[in-house]
Image 1 (spheres, rainbow, N blue to C red):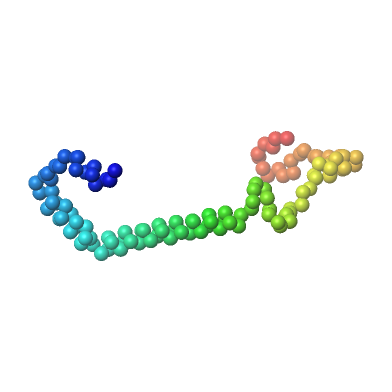
Image 2 (cartoon, rainbow, N blue to C red; image 1 turned 90 degrees about the vertical axis):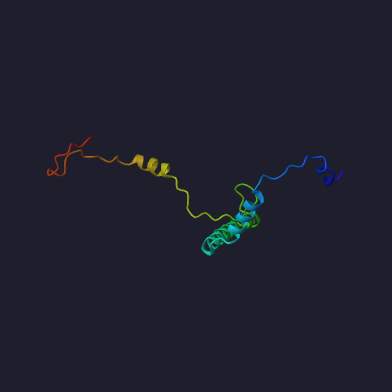
Length: 117
């Protein structure tokens, strides 16, 4: 069934008086928009398009060059930047030696602040 055949079944309605003149006047007003307003609109659209292009390029490059799977480094060998240290064994190893003595007394009498131990 063609779309043009559907339109002949719809009832026709006459436009209200003055409708055509209002439409033509609005079109003329929009056509003669201020050049500064037109430039601002063009600049906003260009800036939005540039931001969208940068975002699309960033996402595309991450998808194409990113790691395959969670935690994967691809074909590269993982390089550790920090060396794991076991501080527990250092403290346990020094336990056989004499334990440190803490002297809890004021070392300065200039301060009136109470020190909690």
